[in-house]
Amino acid sequence: MEASPPDPPPRPRARGIERILAEGAPGYAGAMKASEVVVRLAVNPAGAALDRWGVRFTGHSIVSWIFARSEDVQYNAPLLLTTIGAVSGKQRTVVLPHFSAGDALCVVGSRGGMATDPYWARNLRANPQAWIRVNRK
Figure 1 (cartoon, one colour):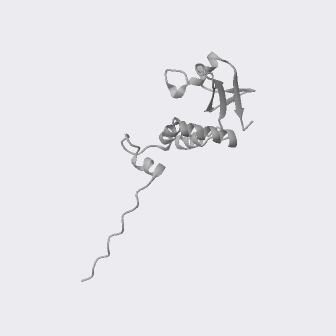
Figure 2 (tube, helix red, strand yellow):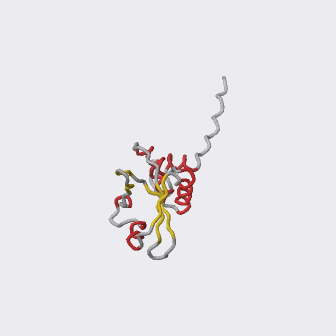
Figure 3 (cartoon, helix red, strand yellow):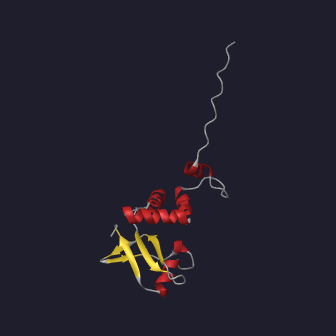
C-alpha cells in the first residue's frame, strides 16, 4: 500500500490591500471594491497628504486613478486648490477633479453627493483668495 503524499503547506495569508480586497476591512462584511479602499485612504489624513504630494510633484493622483479604474470611468488628472481656512486662517490644500469649459476650469463642490458643502467651498465663501495648481504649474 502506497502512502499518500503529505498535504501541501497552508497558503500564506494575504497582507495589506490584497487582504482588504479579498476579505474586507475590519468592521466590514465581505470583500471591498478597490474604490472603497481608495476612499478610505483618501479620507485618512496621511493618505490625503500622500495624494497631495503626488499631485504636486507628478501632476497625477493615484487615488483618482485607482478610483477611475475600479469604477470604469475615464481618469482625469486633478488639480490642487489651496484656500485659506475660514476658521483657522491657515492655508488648506485639496486634490480635486476638474473639467475644462472653454478657457475656464470647473470643479464640483458636491462632497460626494452629501447634503453639506465641502470645507474648501466654505473657505472660499469666507475668503475668495485661492491658488490653483494644474499640471504641476
